[in-house]
Amino acid sequence: MSLLEETIAAVRPLDESAVAEARDRQDIMTKPRGSLGALEDVSVRLAGLAGTCPPELPQPAAVAVFAADHGVHAQGVTPWPQEVTAQMVANFLAGGAVVNAFAAQFGARVVVVDVGVAADLKPGPGLLSRKVAPGTADLSQGPAMTREQARQVVETGIEVARELAADGVRCLVTGDMGIANTTASAALVSAFTGRDPAAVTGRGTGVDDATLTRKVEVVRQALALHRPDPADPLGVLASVGGFEHGALAGFILGGAALRLPVVLDGVITGAAALVAAALAPAAIEACVAGHRSVEPGHTAALDHLGLRPLVDLGLRLGEGTGALLALPLVQGAVRALRDVATFDSAGVTDKDADDRG
Ligand SMILES: O=C(O)c1ccc[n+]([C@@H]2O[C@H](COP(=O)([O-])O)[C@@H](O)[C@H]2O)c1
Ligand SMILES: Cc1cc2nc[nH]c2cc1C
Image 1 (tube, rainbow, N blue to C red):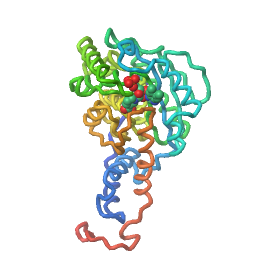
Image 2: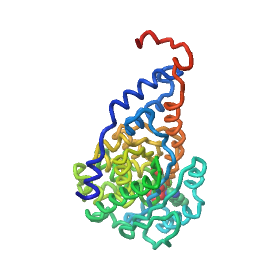
Image 3: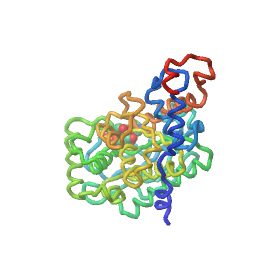
Image 4: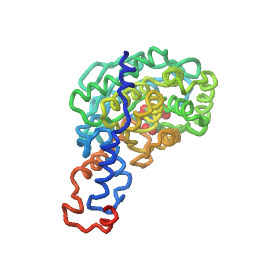
């Protein structure tokens, strides 16, 4: 069996008894029932994922920033030159980007993975060199990558999840860097959700009205050309995806197979999560949506996946920044489930004690 098939076979639903135990415990903790809102659901999900209540704390965490370039850049879908992808990778490695600041604040390690940056990158600490090709082909003119490359890059993402887990990481955080990747993201979201390109294509780094119009047309043209079949997830990825999307899909599958929580970032990860869900639907049960990005395609992807974002601050940066902001929320949710006293143990009167029997 290939690494991909083996990983898909290892992805299983949440453990129902640990889920029930966590829900029951939330109801006897010294707080009004339901008062931790979405954080109760996060703690229950992580208990079900671990198969035990309480689950281990999701730490240490590592953010994997998957970087790649995009042939569709040639269509004028972004005002930023392609070399910014490689320049920002250098910035991540030097510790100078927002992802580095947030990772330092929240105690996460940063790993940068080159899965398809157009320029040659100097190997160095913190960089995993896993280039599949120097950028995808232009998805509006033909397939972005071959089916073999799609499989290879998904398996690369699985391997990165495995390597981090073997290194003691207990919470995976997704990140991306790739000029023009919001165009490929919109195409993936449209292909998997069936929504119109105009409804899921956004301004990315902040494009003007004329560029947004062109971007929507490029996505529409690509979907008309490829007619991607959502029942063939590797085919969809190969026709309109990016290498970072494929690696992120694999990273999610790899985390789910290892039963490690995966905190998701913005629209690029959201589009990748649609690929992962199409390959193994239960993989989404290992995921927590860290935030909601401004990109309309992100909300479409989250709705399709049934995920509720924890943070909604109007971010549209990528790099893993939105997911990192949610990391202390995820960790706090589990710590509360683990450490908070019960009405009985703390001698606090529970107004509903009689109802529970
Ligand atoms: O995370 C998001 O939702 C997000 C939204 C808009 C832009 N980005 C980042 O901006 C870059 C892509 O933007 P663009 O306009 O070149 O397609 C890429 O490096 C992404 O990480 C990221
Ligand atoms: C400067 C810059 C930083 C980024 N980080 C993620 N995407 C980005 C895009 C640009 C343009």
